[in-house]
Amino acid sequence: MTAQTHVPPTALDHTAPRDEPVVYPPTRWALAGLGAGLAGVGVMVSSSMVDAVYDEKLQGDADAISRALGDMVPQMLVFHVSAMVAAVLMIPFAAGLHRRLKATTPADSVLPLVAFSGVLVTAVMLVVGSGLDTEFIFAAGDPEIVVAEDAAMFNHWIGTVPWCWGLLGLAGLTLFGAARHGGVPRWIGLVGLVGGGLTLLLGISPLQYMAGMTGPIGLVVIALGFLAGDKAFRGRS
Image 1 (cartoon, rainbow, N blue to C red):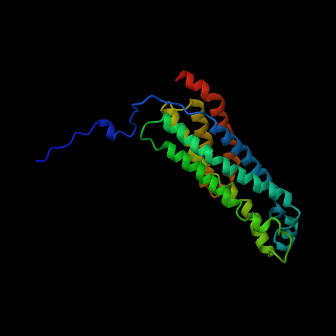
Image 2 (image 1 turned 90 degrees about the vertical axis):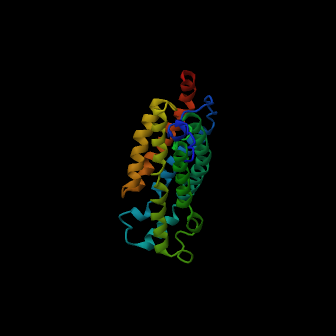
Image 3 (image 1 turned 180 degrees about the vertical axis):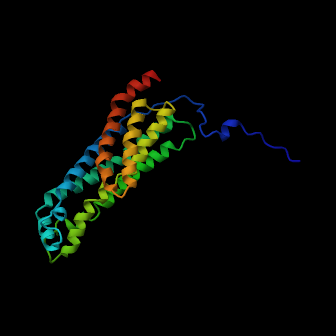
């Protein structure tokens, strides 16, 4: 018989404790999250102002919708800049959140990677949602450049795709998991559970664009929580 190698219990323990002391990273990354959340609010507001395709007087008339979009170039420019600023700032926020959770959750926890992925994919959705802007913003209302039906489709595109913040809810839920391990303040965990859960459920539903209403606000609250509350939390832990 072959002798079996003894495996320490913690090797199979999915909540294996850390051997090294917890080192809290700086919270400057949360500033990026705050900026991303505020820019995200700008995305929702400016996108809502590009409403030609939703105007009851214009519905069904692609030519009229295209002409109306030609008068909404400033709103579309604000939308594009807001979406790209939010997407860019989400990347350092995602990286910082990953590092923060990795420092304070069990050694083999999946929570940091899930949080990072939820924020990263949301950033990608914003890039995709604004990806047609160059093609349409300055050509809207010009039938020689853009077919009216395509212009109407573009209005639908920016009214839905950049609103798909559902996977950001995953990041919120990971905060609840981290709070259970004592890795983040309990109130942040509860905010993550409620706000993140609602955002994720809205994203799963056929009305997935409604996640754009809760996602940016939740991001602002969580970022402020880490900026203002993390220092006191570290002092107690």
